[in-house]
Image (cartoon, rainbow, N blue to C red):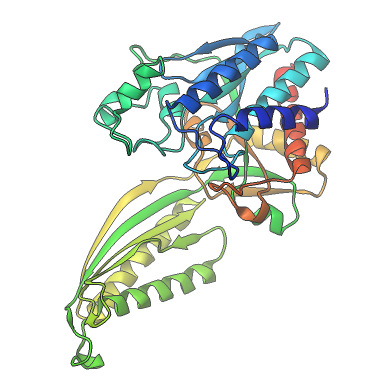
Length: 409
């Protein structure tokens, strides 16, 4: 079996389901494009001797049952949905890579000792409906139908109507999966770290924690020509000082801390009025919980300091507070060993700055992640791409990891 040729063929096939004329894919949960993709994936699994089944909400499994330990499962996969005008690798690569790796192992070494299962999660992105990780949260009985019963997409289609039209429904009973001994997800990095450092494989040690703030500053709107600089209560000026000082501080602390001011809305937002109000967002991430907490205190202290200095009222709302999720040390060492064998001196132990299904899995089963580089760090974009040799190398590393976990006592 030629891994490179097999991947190119499968990637071209599945990229056509929701494929766009300008390249990339729009394949949203419970759409016709999504239904076609999962249906064809099921056929591909079965054609290659995999046993298949869907769960209640549309997560698809394809498995090769173990000969000696059939009740011990080694699981690998990712999500089948995309963002609007997304790339062909985010999510899809993890499913196809797992499929190819298991297919290769089964053809080369025969039936594994432990069950090998490829998982296509129905949704991760939250791009059609305002809910993320519907697939993995249902897999572990975390999703509550009350959270989506009244959810609609941009065209006014109700979540549960789209789900039922696709042949699925809310789970009536909880899933019970005590058989899973490991989950390994391979994914494109979606950043520039591996490419910049000329590395081929990322051994992920964890997924960063995130804190997100919505901040409101209120000063006084006034005439831009008649209000002297020293008499202004200018909220944009205060915001600028906050942003500058905190970005400077984040650079001083260094990686893997990241800080982003992503939304800024001054009021009244016109050319000749001193802005009397501004709303802005802050996104702060770190792999270490203590470091994240420490910097978040600095964020709040800086907002208070600058506001008081400028006679401005402030309101600080922490609306997201997600803990870092660490990968399993034993599985990390297995991935690292495979990376050393397949890409000596070309791998890097690193944190993931983006969220992934693995962060849900890591709370319940031993979990590991493998990254391959993203060209120019581009993702969630039709121009998302990875060198084919890096994609193949990632599959080879995944194949060796799955071999160690499923074929050895």
